[in-house]
Length: 374
Image (cartoon, rainbow, N blue to C red; front, top):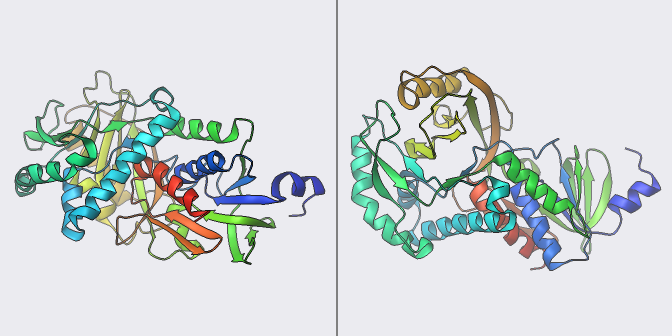
């Protein structure tokens, strides 16, 4: 792309910080940099029309892990590591709510539930046996116990009679969350510039500045910060893989009794109400290799499993229509802990949010901003 003098001077001259990715992490990083460096020139590059990946495509869960997820994590990580990870998620949720306000987020503190199929008796019994231990481990994080049994009062079918309730979990409006973040970033006396449709292709740390190449133009910046999560592997970030999440939402269901957020199968399935609609996602465990992709789209295998779950468990005997389907790309890896690291003196990243971007993105963005001057 041939740039004019005006374009160079207005958008690309004497940049202090360039953030790659305008999702939750990238925008949170930008807000923190503006707070700590009020006079800095900050540019955000976004390859999509909307924030590409998961930030505008997630289910809107303000959660930090179901009991089965946390127990699975404890099988692979130390108690201190798991507690620290849950604490990071919890702090991230609070930071997001403080920064934007519950009204802008349409935040609803309706609690979260884990449900168990009739064939999951052993899993449920294990959860009940370990509940006190997990509550004790996490009580310093929340100041209270976070898991307890609850009755099935939602009319679900083919499940065990008891659910596990987490009253601290909530839900929010993903689109309004991102609009509020974008408004905050682009407002004020020192607005932060965002260029959409611009993808980072290469960078070189030259010492005092970083040479950046994109699909349209080249420029130099003092610090480069990568916040592309599931797409970070394409930029050479090791330890993070893309993970596609397929989602659908029903049309309105008059008199819908479901209210809250719900988890099944160690979080591989999740659903919630959106007004009188049911939003449902998951099924990646049915084809892990096929869903390790940066390509958006749906597959008959997973979409069929979601529809079966609606018919047999969530809405038994209740007619419904699928109104819309979509997918998002998360960043996962062998470890649940995010990668917040420096590659060189002037280049750092904050990625691998493990499907917990709503919860952890704000905190990761704040830590990534801190690395810019570390």
